[in-house]
Image (tube, rainbow, N blue to C red; front, top):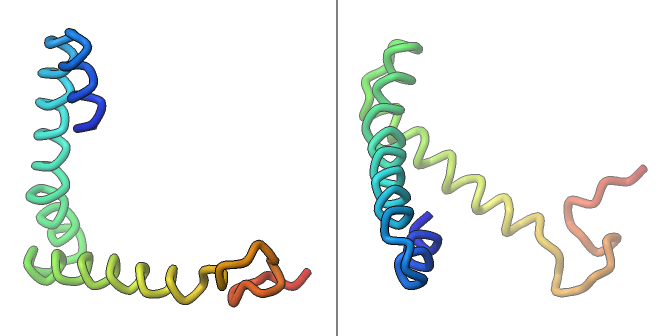
Length: 85
């Protein structure tokens, strides 16, 4: 959203840029503050442990994505996680 807001501001649509920035702040507040509290309350875990688990999961997915990517080729059979059908 930030690049969109910057482009809107540069092209002269200041109201759209301000609106996008406010929306970005609201979404970030919800993702960083409210989401761990809501998830933690639903499963009965302290929010800090929920936040740590979410961070660890994102880091793990990043590692798995790097393991499963191609070896700089366009051949799908060289892909480590290739689905044999």
